Image (cartoon, rainbow, N blue to C red):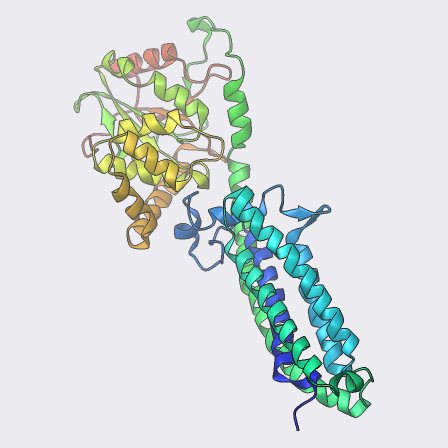
Length: 447
């Protein structure tokens, strides 16, 4: 004799799928909290998965932050969680009582959820133009739930005796017996859910702490961009400009490490070493670069100028990595020009970086391969992050900012209104050449 509908393998699979849906949306919640720092599925390493703004997490971040990411003011993640919990609860009730009305209610809820899921998938394809992997996994779970519900419903209609039996509650003993396999499935689901909360939840907290630290140490990129768009300050009398070194910072002891391998312009044997530290997404860095470049370098043969790309924000890591690659191809300054020309408030996607590289004469396909292959990307990012930590400790006192200018190992204090005017830099370089500054870096920095 066949098992009752509420204890059939099909009923248990439906219940298990509902619990799987709960696991998927909870996991999506934690990845969203982490700003997808470990990739959309949360399976990537922090460095390789999220350092590049155009990495695997881009589509997930775009979908979950779009204007369609909520309904009636509630995030779709919470709607998804509510949907799966309701289905699981109704199916558990059906398993305990065999009441066919609960099975029909479950079918109705799943049908409604499937229609809304179709709408969300349509939005990803037609409106957003990006795809969230975990969202699509959830869509697959909902679709499978609907198929299994329809199969169950058709099977029930074929069994003429099923409706009459299932409309009546089972005896207490039978109900308890029918719940045993459900409880086993629920226990497995609970273990997986707790494990995900422990692992993904902890990683989300780490990512949030990292983001909070970065926000504390760095200015908001939108605020920086707004400041850059503000009307320029009136040009002050050069004699009144605050051209000085930062009294809170001691001269940098290890200048060799600061500039090792960094591109440079000017005579190798120049007595003055000038270092410019910049983030490719910083508007003020672009202004300084336009000043300390080209004609300014040619007008100061007593100085050698080094350019140090520094990822102040994590979303700048991909561009700094691209600058490292372009340096190796002898196209560093052309790449800097392209990145500054295409500068935005939140970095660039991988495609945009590759496009900029092609315009700078860099091997675009080769760059893409290096920035998407963990074997080449991981050591490159580790080198960048290690150097970033060193620079932060060497040239900041409690909070790193960019741009920074260093002359013969001494960090400049920018003018509060004008930043680093050419007149100030000219005077300090001239004084350093005359013996008024700490000694230069010496040999070992790359052209």
